[in-house]
Amino acid sequence: MPSFHTKVSLRGFHFEDYHLTGILAAGILAADVGKAVAFGGAPNTFKLAGDGETIVGRLATVEDRKVEGQLVGTIAFHFANTLPIKAGQAVAAGDTVVGAGGGEVKKAAAADHNANFVAEVIGNEAVVVKV
Image (cartoon, rainbow, N blue to C red; front, top):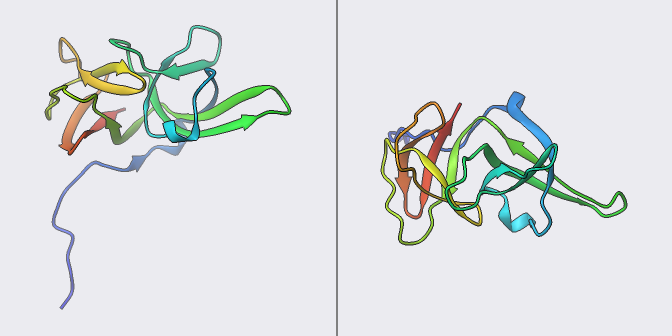
């Protein structure tokens, strides 16, 4: 008997045209892939989203270019995928999220669906749509 996919989810959609390379702040590791990033202050530089910071993208890859003395990575500026929710934070479908520190997210004080919105929550991860 065939098995049919019956759950609708926005998790895991990629918009490759919006995946761009940027310089990463010191200390970012491959283990940080999948976390929220914010503008790092210097040209073309990005850091893990801090507390209350606007999320500009999701970290897709990390590449340590030791020979060049650079840490670079791919940032997904448009995505529909998971971001980790900071422990103890309540996030629900329909919320907008902002940084909560260390690339984790929390509910924004006010919803702004032009920035992003949570489509669903799966365990300790929010499926965030940023388009």
